[in-house]
Length: 222
Length: 222
DNA sequence: CGGCAATTTGAACATTTTCAATACGGGTGG
DNA sequence: CCACCCGTATTGAAAATGTTCAAATTGCCG
Image (tube, rainbow over all chains, first blue to last red; front, side, top):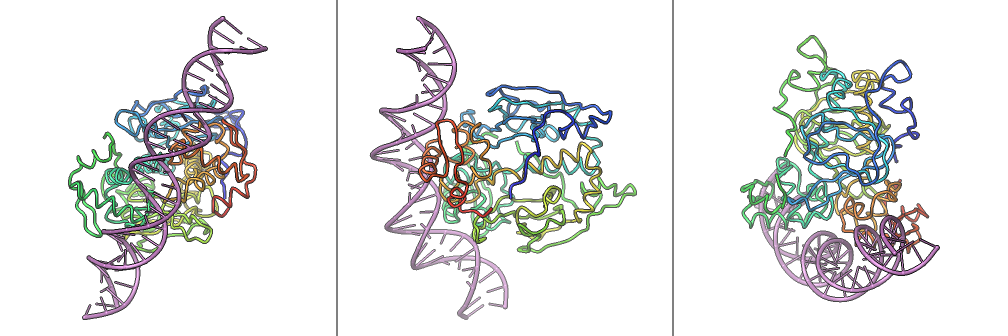
């Protein structure tokens, strides 16, 4: 069952969800400003102050996150297309979480976070709260298996660093699945991490002993 | 940089985002009803009519999606914890997209979709619209590499089925990354799919020729 | 004190990655 | 308009890594 992203192409603000919810066509004014980007251009970079929120009207944008300290890794993370928002992390974080690059010519509209903030209405409104919680969830989520993320040991180390607190709750076999490996492989990876002194292991618990070692093995910044 | 999910444990409705945005403590009433689940219990199943939206106050819930037709594959997809919403797809789809199972004892609160609908306020309000677009995005997204999703050919076939329209836009090397493989492997997988007659391949485009063959190779329902 | 289910371990087997070399396709400059 | 260049995609063969399958271990629960 494939959910339609958008019923039809967005050609005018009256057809655009953003425009419509701003009341365009009924005397309202949409605070988002049309922009265009060529294929290859960046909209924003990971780590940069999150100043503007974007809405994609037409085109394809690629989100990526540096996977290595040197910025070498080009971890593509997701594709955003017609009808998607970009940079919503501006609502809940000071900086962009990933870099956004147009991979086709793109038509979008954008607005400064302050504008978006008031456009969205009171912080306490249920819809606003749900939106923020959802963003928080999306951007907090352990970076998925993006790219051949190195070997199993590295993936497990990375996961323990970001999502370690659930390590005790979630049965091994599910954790393995989340990490894209079979339970046997997870088991061996944990054994390895234990041997290196990064964690303390019992059959049903994992405790981080030395986060620094873990970070080294994960090969990530932070 | 790790974003905090929640500042403190949720012990009363006054401290709960859902409660606060319902005006609890200021004369308001929260429509969400407290529930508890034991470890192992399911909250809902994939494919079932999406009737209620949940909010996790305390505990860990695992989202999974059947990966094979026979429901055999137990593809864990994500972990939801304190402060997360569950079943938000009810806003935009008739059925749940994945199954939710408590992996610890869980405290949550839930409300029927009709209630949530009016609680969230007008469908045309910006925040509501943004929330829905975001949900749409999340649930439309190509099912990430969850579990050892079979071999490269299967992963690529599956991706072409769900996200195929971007196949032409996004440079191969990024697609490879999104699928958790190196470009060389993607190249070989595409060559294979082409040999099987499922797709037509040029150096920079991919066109689906026979979706049925593709589905067979992907080994999924739909 | 058994019995069960999940996890761990071992060894053979598949698949993917790596590394290096080659083929394309598009853009550039003549 | 055509030849040349450059970066991306493809192909091949060896090496590394993960999976599979079977067996042993462990901890929990009755």
